[in-house]
Amino acid sequence: MNFSDLGLSEKVLAAVRSAGYEKPTPIQEQAIPHVLARRDVLGVAQTGTGKTASFTLPMLSLLETGRARARMPRTLILEPTRELAAQVEQSFVVYGQNHRLTVSLLIGGVSFADQLKKLDRGADVLIATPGRLLDHFERGKLLLTGVDTFVVDEADRMLDMGFIPDIERICKLLPPTRQTVFFSATMPKEIQHLADQFLRNPVKVEVAPAASTAKTITQRLISSGSKPWDKRAVLRSLIDNAKDLKNAIIFCNRKRDVATVCRSLTKHGYSAGALHGDMDQTSRMATLDGFKKNEVTLLVASDVAARGLDIPTVSHVFNFDLPTHAEDYVHRIGRTGRAGREGTAISIATKADRKYIDAIEALTGDTIEWIGAIDFSSSSSEGDDEERGNSRKPSRRGRGKQRSDAPKNTEARKQDTPKQEERRQEKAPAPRRKEQPAPTPAPVSAPVSAADYGDPSPRPVPSRNEASRNNRGRSKDRGERQVIGMGDHVPAFLLLPIRPTKEKEQKNGTSD
Ligand code: ADP
Ligand code: MG
Image (cartoon, rainbow, N blue to C red; front, side, top):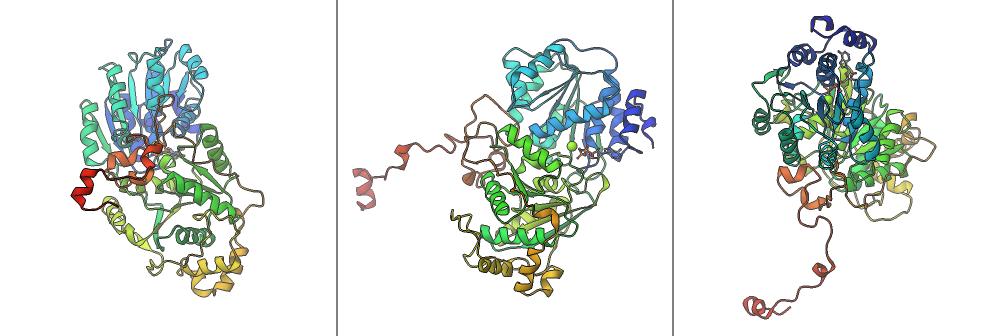
């Protein structure tokens, strides 16, 4: 099938031709005619298979008739992260090159003023993260009653607990007659139920079972001791031994670790930048830009980069930590192997990760091969000292020692003695070590005003204790914006030693 068989307008077809697309992808082939027919659609397809064009192309065709009125957008697209929203805006630039449409981007972390100007002009397309959208609404700058098409990208993420109140609110502001379109690569059953409540008699287009991974991604696991320095040594070794590594995204579960790993890599001479939700938006965009332009080779990121980001040339994804939710694994590794390209995803696994691996394999239906023998033993305490706040440069000896704990299993590793290996590391391939100092990661100690996901910008969003987060249920664990009590803030009085009351003393029979 060709694009011209899908019912798209001439202007859109011309843009598709100049984008260099020859054939529609399966999700485009199946979803576009239904979106054009103004049906509600639930589209599920693997990462990197062109879901964005599945909704943007028919939207552009539909928008050719009619015009926008001030503060009353005609269409609305919701995205879970600011970066992703900005990327979809870019898609409208590419696909909408023959149209004269106003596309407005409402994301947190940037000034309201410019956003207002565009809204005032009348937006044909409004792309937003939920927090900032509601902020504009609350300020009376926006009316959503003119929205004909409502798109929720990364739909399962958007219907996850953290976002759902916002999505419900937004839906109530939209006209009931609107068309609703959901897209995602994963769609857990419990979320699917929820999705059905928002869609009216939808056409379900599922080109591969939900959560199946793109076949172009080679997946591997590698064992490591559980200490952070064990994992960092394994990571360095993976980078050093990776075949055809052009660049890589390294995912950590916690923002704190994003900063630590990035700092450690930089200290070891790698070109690395950090991306997580506690960074200000300018730094977030700057890091991402540097990575896209190949100025930064390794992007150390939290799950803020897991969803949707389309950087076609990402050759490797490394999971420094295995994600605690299997769906996140699918999205993280989906940052490579996009649009039919080859990609490699390697996850560092410690002994405690077995349950996560089982869940991932159950969800994706893939069995992930291990690199070499499985060995969870830890190295000595001679790490790279990040954890201990020691700025001492890692000694040769220290590094040699780490190497012996790093994967013993790659081809090179099997042949090399630690000394040879060390020498080989010194002559490591070009892209990873750059002469100039790499950008320093943004501090993680900044108060959390905007979460990793979405952007409830000026609304107070206290931070939360990330360590305890992992012990809680899915909903609390996920959003990085749901806050329990006072979050990270511990009032001084809570730190005072506890003196048992008389009553307690008697009960416990102790007075200590
Ligand atoms: P998804 O949302 O499914 O993860 P994207 O919409 O981000 O994927 O698209 C992934 C990549 O595929 C993009 O770089 C896009 O330019 C490219 N792409 C989309 N449609 C086609 C097509 N029909 N032919 C070739 N490349 C395409
Ligand atoms: Mg996408």
